[in-house]
Length: 321
Length: 173
Image (cartoon, each protein chain N blue to C red):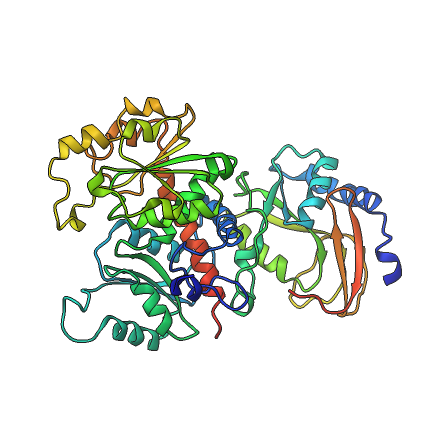
């Protein structure tokens, strides 16, 4: 088990931090999804907050820009009645002065209870978790191309709400898996939940290393990858991570790997279409698919708040202090 | 008395409680909304809802997000989500639980209820009031009153058949 996987579970087997979906047990994942289900009705009431984290402080510490993820974490924390601080930082690898860990420890000294951290470096949040005190819990909101566990959990939650049994599903993850922390986290979570057929569909330039080792099957052809699947997850083409310019010809990418009304006919009739957002319309997915009848993309956004509330409440409550 | 409480005829007690609630339901200007507290309170509420033939949908509350011991023991393992589809604004609410003990569950339920709206009144209905109140909370309709020492615990089992079990000694949570 990786250090992140063991750091996030306490001696009683409870969720102490959330750093990765790797090594998270099936029962624990299911209990997170069940807790999220209980938080869903909170967002539909007149008063959309519950008092669980009243008097607790949650800091969104983002060393990488993000609007969507930060907003949903902020809303999740506020709906738990926490006090929320949003800090957009330059990572110390780029700026001089105190290191990122110094920043974290300074905030810890100010009495912060939960850190939601996004960082460009792989494994950064696990490094922080190893250094912080017992009174602090850490939630990984994305570390480089490594992991984005709440996205994977909200995806699993969304699938569970549409499909009866993980044990007979075919799921295609399509697009830029090479740069995608979402893909990695999803494969771990879906595999643990018992999904037998996970397909990774991408051009060779964007294929991840050895998907077979994680229990997934690589497909280099979209049509065969989409054939008869129950769920298709489109991934955003991550221009900002593509220093090496792997894809130059966007129209060709769209032609070969874009999700279109035409290739949606290949899916099972009751299949759902997912995307973690933000979408590049007309690149990896067409608007008519993103907002079409099979799409659950906006549901994913709503579910994301409930899942993040569940995780935050769990790790805040499992601290030793 | 403690010898007899787990031998209580629950069905007959529910009949008596429904009879006691009937005038309140019939005289209400707006249709009352019945809400049961998960899990035992919901079983009792289901039984009363059927006996009173209420037209409004039965609601349920899972009060775990409103408990006062979160900072001590963290989030409870979950039961089913709250489900309150009826609008409770300006309507009387009949809040139902199985056992009234410290009153902390009812306190939590009242807080959650008011996040759904502003009822004209809340009537508290419990199958058993076992004493040991720690808050200024009392039930309006009580199936059976009993005084149990702190070391004794009474628990409703169900959903069918409903029966009470009395145990002695400390229980976790």
